[in-house]
Length: 221
Image 1: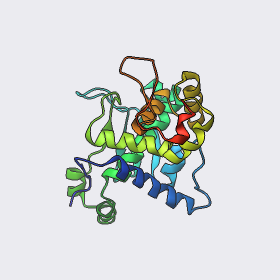
Image 2: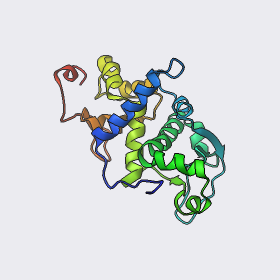
Image 3: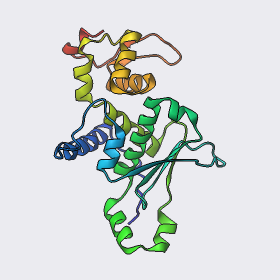
Image 4: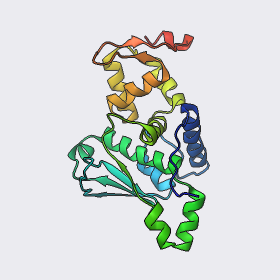
């Protein structure tokens, strides 16, 4: 059995459920009950993951934003990318993205066995870190991890509460909403479009009502 999993397909519903499992476990702890805007550092701490800032070298595929080292239970954020320090929303998304890899793509039963046995051959062959790069074109496991990050930082139930007094087709309302959740405006609009609440044509700034509109959401448009 492999330490790292590369599922060809994970449904959005499955990923949302995995996020909810994390929240359920956190709620059971008085010290880690989720509070929004969510600090992904606390989620990492709850999951026994360390986070460090370090210089990650650019390779032949380009700049690395962050990586997770499964055996070390370590998330490394590239301090050589200034925008990660300057944009708290991007920093949060990056950490949440790495947590997504930890939950969705690590075989934890196998990991615990490897850590216990300290099998060096296994470490060399099967414990390569996840290297995360630009998030403009996400596919496969990278898309899965980023969708997890969006669900973690902006759970649908919390979004439903937060949008009650917002007009989702008005940019000022969306920017205020993004600030409330501590995310970038891009993170927010992508999440709302995934939910079907709004639609923004590629290359356009015009916001249209989404295809999935409930009675409660009609007043928000």
